[in-house]
Length: 400
Ligand code: FAD
Ligand code: UDP
Image (cartoon, rainbow, N blue to C red):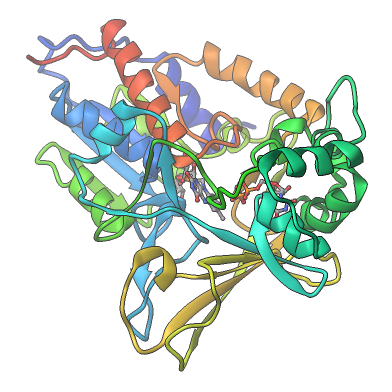
């Protein structure tokens, strides 16, 4: 027997041809049902409503908008990120300009310390990191490069997350900063993960201690949730939080679905479950103004159960007599936060993606629907591009 979800997915997928703009006699209350109010769903909803004049219903199973970027005031009145630290950075002028319609920004460049050998040193590895860790003087960038070159163990080809780091810095720095952190974060050895995972973190020989080097680096001035509220505040957008996709009659609501949840869930795990890594957050408020010297401190040692501690005031710039922090404990149980980049997982995703491509009138967008380790700006860019493609294909008729 087919589950309710599959039955509805099928009827949503096959029954109704795309509606033309002139066909305003449609009995359906909406033109598009958007599943998920994170970046993917909210950008799609905003474009469809504002640019294409569509009537959009946005649902999310959580009791709030903003997806994993959700922020809120905690009981003490400190702004925290419920699902862990979210730092906005992008090289895309388009993405930055688009989001700037919905928020002002607070300039913010992210800096991270890592605790190793009893010290707290800059992460990513840079010249200062090497000097502090090994108690040496490296008078210029060239001497830092020579220090690393003397330890690097060239690997060819570079395939795994172990290869990337060992090839760049050798085994001691690899073990100090990457091996334990990665084993905790992913439940896998770096040798079992694609190179794309640790490639996110560069190695530097200068003193640049910023985590990112993107052209635009900033935090939404009033927070992410406020930015999402402005995106979704549109006369043609209806929002229903606390609502599961399986509990709505998609085919009766709209002719088109934009789905931003896990792709394997959409297809009832037909080929088995795609693995996602999750986190448990331990949030605490402390009766002191400041807790640590950086917004984020990483703990790469394998015998420390958490990976990092975030102090939110240092991201948001909020002044408050107390401070709120969160510890991240990686786990397999819980909300799907991270797709796990490995060849076998990618192969399984390809099977779901083939189903998705064959599904009419459903568009799959975002980190979970595409099983990609996307940053926020990449999801916004993907959603804007997807909207443009949809409008070009005239599934969406731009009402202008
Ligand atoms: P999500 O934000 O996951 O939104 C999907 C929404 O769909 C969810 O709200 C979910 O409840 C809803 N949903 C799913 N299935 C259903 C269903 N069946 N019915 C109803 N609703 C459903 N990116 C950065 O750029 N910088 C960072 O610093 C950063 N830090 C991160 C830290 C952590 C701990 C994590 C987990 C991610 C981080 N990211 C960061 C990535 C960022 O969170 C994602 O790129 C972005 O939020 C993805 O947006 P999305 O809309 O694709 O997915
Ligand atoms: N990483 C690590 N040590 C660190 C920081 C990162 O080993 O101090 C590895 C780890 O595998 C991590 C990946 O690099 O999952 C990507 O790090 P990033 O900070 O981008 O992770 P995210 O913020 O997405 O959780």
